[in-house]
Image 1 (cartoon, rainbow, N blue to C red):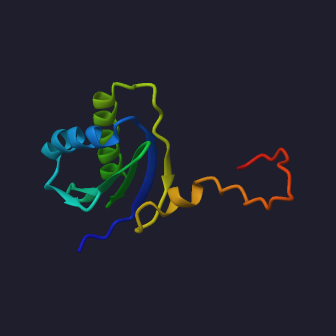
Image 2: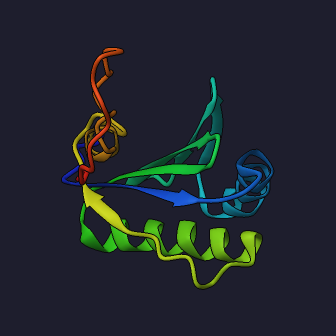
Length: 130
């Protein structure tokens, strides 16, 4: 079993995320040992690292685990490069966040909290959400 030391995850906004992911699977496969459909997720095995890409309604969730920084940056470059080529959006910034061995935990915790439910007697006041 491979021991990974580098973990990161990201969210990228994209219209038609399923179509983009289908094309990414075809184009990234040439760099991988295997590409496996695991439910709604796609697992890319690069040998010394792996990536999971999950389509969501408004984009893609990306997660990388790698043996070291060199492998991590290689996987990151492949995923970002193919995403930009397929989506034709070079201006979309892919912001990576430190992660763990559990995919997408960081992204879930970064999502803005839902506004509290109001009782009928309460009025809405201006609030800033993180």
